[in-house]
Image (cartoon, rainbow, N blue to C red; front, side, top):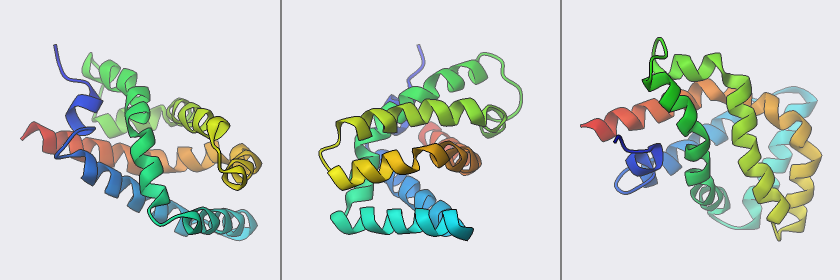
Length: 152
Protein backbone atom coordinates (compact mmCIF):
# COMPACT_ATOMS: atom_id res chain seq x y z
CA UNK A 1 0.00 0.00 0.00
CA UNK A 2 1.33 3.42 -0.89
CA UNK A 3 2.00 6.10 1.68
CA UNK A 4 -0.39 8.97 2.28
CA UNK A 5 0.51 12.57 1.59
CA UNK A 6 0.90 13.10 5.35
CA UNK A 7 3.29 10.14 5.57
CA UNK A 8 5.27 11.37 2.58
CA UNK A 9 5.57 15.14 3.01
CA UNK A 10 3.97 15.83 6.38
CA UNK A 11 6.90 14.34 8.27
CA UNK A 12 10.60 15.14 8.73
CA UNK A 13 12.67 15.94 6.79
CA UNK A 14 10.01 17.40 4.45
CA UNK A 15 7.46 18.93 6.83
CA UNK A 16 9.52 21.97 7.83
CA UNK A 17 10.17 22.93 4.20
CA UNK A 18 6.54 22.32 3.20
CA UNK A 19 5.45 24.69 6.00
CA UNK A 20 8.02 27.30 4.95
CA UNK A 21 6.91 27.05 1.32
CA UNK A 22 3.23 27.33 2.33
CA UNK A 23 4.04 30.50 4.31
CA UNK A 24 5.92 31.93 1.30
CA UNK A 25 2.91 31.08 -0.88
CA UNK A 26 0.52 32.80 1.54
CA UNK A 27 2.76 35.89 1.72
CA UNK A 28 2.94 36.06 -2.09
CA UNK A 29 -0.82 35.59 -2.51
CA UNK A 30 -1.55 38.37 -0.03
CA UNK A 31 1.03 40.69 -1.57
CA UNK A 32 -0.49 40.17 -5.04
CA UNK A 33 -3.95 41.36 -3.95
CA UNK A 34 -5.04 44.74 -5.25
CA UNK A 35 -7.93 47.16 -4.99
CA UNK A 36 -10.10 47.73 -1.95
CA UNK A 37 -10.53 44.05 -1.18
CA UNK A 38 -6.76 43.60 -1.54
CA UNK A 39 -6.17 46.40 0.94
CA UNK A 40 -8.59 44.72 3.35
CA UNK A 41 -6.87 41.34 2.98
CA UNK A 42 -3.45 42.90 3.47
CA UNK A 43 -4.74 44.68 6.58
CA UNK A 44 -6.19 41.50 8.04
CA UNK A 45 -3.00 39.57 7.30
CA UNK A 46 -0.80 42.24 8.85
CA UNK A 47 -3.04 42.23 11.94
CA UNK A 48 -2.86 38.46 12.24
CA UNK A 49 0.92 38.46 11.86
CA UNK A 50 1.31 41.02 14.65
CA UNK A 51 -0.47 38.83 17.21
CA UNK A 52 2.48 36.60 17.71
CA UNK A 53 5.79 36.10 15.96
CA UNK A 54 5.53 32.85 14.06
CA UNK A 55 1.72 32.83 14.19
CA UNK A 56 1.28 32.02 10.49
CA UNK A 57 3.82 29.16 10.45
CA UNK A 58 2.33 27.76 13.65
CA UNK A 59 -1.15 27.78 12.12
CA UNK A 60 0.13 26.18 8.90
CA UNK A 61 1.87 23.52 11.00
CA UNK A 62 -1.31 22.88 12.98
CA UNK A 63 -3.44 22.58 9.83
CA UNK A 64 -1.02 20.85 7.48
CA UNK A 65 -2.05 17.26 8.24
CA UNK A 66 -5.74 18.12 7.81
CA UNK A 67 -5.05 20.00 4.57
CA UNK A 68 -3.01 17.07 3.23
CA UNK A 69 -5.86 14.79 4.28
CA UNK A 70 -8.27 16.88 2.20
CA UNK A 71 -5.90 16.66 -0.78
CA UNK A 72 -5.46 12.89 -0.40
CA UNK A 73 -8.62 11.86 -2.32
CA UNK A 74 -7.58 14.06 -5.25
CA UNK A 75 -4.11 12.54 -5.21
CA UNK A 76 -5.61 9.04 -5.08
CA UNK A 77 -7.96 9.73 -8.02
CA UNK A 78 -5.09 11.20 -10.03
CA UNK A 79 -2.86 8.19 -9.23
CA UNK A 80 -5.69 5.83 -10.21
CA UNK A 81 -5.76 7.18 -13.72
CA UNK A 82 -6.13 10.91 -13.81
CA UNK A 83 -4.63 12.51 -16.86
CA UNK A 84 -1.75 14.94 -16.91
CA UNK A 85 0.29 16.03 -13.93
CA UNK A 86 -0.93 16.28 -10.35
CA UNK A 87 -0.92 20.10 -10.57
CA UNK A 88 -3.03 19.95 -13.75
CA UNK A 89 -5.43 17.54 -12.03
CA UNK A 90 -5.79 19.79 -8.96
CA UNK A 91 -6.09 23.00 -11.00
CA UNK A 92 -8.91 21.46 -13.06
CA UNK A 93 -10.76 20.88 -9.76
CA UNK A 94 -9.66 24.09 -8.03
CA UNK A 95 -13.18 25.07 -6.96
CA UNK A 96 -13.71 21.77 -5.12
CA UNK A 97 -10.14 21.73 -3.79
CA UNK A 98 -10.60 25.23 -2.35
CA UNK A 99 -13.87 24.31 -0.68
CA UNK A 100 -12.35 21.18 0.86
CA UNK A 101 -9.32 23.09 2.16
CA UNK A 102 -11.56 25.79 3.61
CA UNK A 103 -13.51 23.23 5.66
CA UNK A 104 -10.29 22.81 7.65
CA UNK A 105 -9.83 26.53 8.30
CA UNK A 106 -13.55 26.95 9.02
CA UNK A 107 -13.33 24.31 11.76
CA UNK A 108 -10.15 25.87 13.15
CA UNK A 109 -11.67 29.37 13.18
CA UNK A 110 -14.78 28.08 14.93
CA UNK A 111 -12.59 26.72 17.75
CA UNK A 112 -10.19 29.70 17.91
CA UNK A 113 -9.75 31.43 21.22
CA UNK A 114 -8.35 34.50 19.45
CA UNK A 115 -11.52 36.62 19.31
CA UNK A 116 -10.08 39.17 16.92
CA UNK A 117 -8.71 36.51 14.57
CA UNK A 118 -12.04 34.69 14.65
CA UNK A 119 -13.98 37.88 13.82
CA UNK A 120 -11.57 38.78 11.02
CA UNK A 121 -11.88 35.29 9.55
CA UNK A 122 -15.68 35.32 9.73
CA UNK A 123 -15.81 38.78 8.17
CA UNK A 124 -13.59 37.71 5.27
CA UNK A 125 -14.79 34.12 4.78
CA UNK A 126 -17.00 35.14 1.86
CA UNK A 127 -14.00 36.12 -0.25
CA UNK A 128 -11.79 33.33 1.05
CA UNK A 129 -12.87 30.75 -1.52
CA UNK A 130 -11.97 33.03 -4.43
CA UNK A 131 -8.57 33.63 -2.84
CA UNK A 132 -7.94 29.93 -2.26
CA UNK A 133 -9.03 29.06 -5.81
CA UNK A 134 -6.47 31.62 -7.04
CA UNK A 135 -3.79 29.95 -4.90
CA UNK A 136 -4.51 26.37 -6.02
CA UNK A 137 -2.09 26.43 -9.02
CA UNK A 138 0.86 27.44 -6.84
CA UNK A 139 -0.22 25.12 -4.04
CA UNK A 140 -0.47 22.25 -6.52
CA UNK A 141 3.07 22.94 -7.77
CA UNK A 142 4.32 23.14 -4.18
CA UNK A 143 2.77 19.75 -3.28
CA UNK A 144 4.08 18.16 -6.46
CA UNK A 145 7.59 19.54 -5.85
CA UNK A 146 7.70 18.04 -2.35
CA UNK A 147 6.24 14.73 -3.48
CA UNK A 148 8.93 14.52 -6.16
CA UNK A 149 11.60 15.32 -3.57
CA UNK A 150 10.23 12.63 -1.26
CA UNK A 151 10.56 10.06 -4.07
CA UNK A 152 14.32 10.49 -4.25
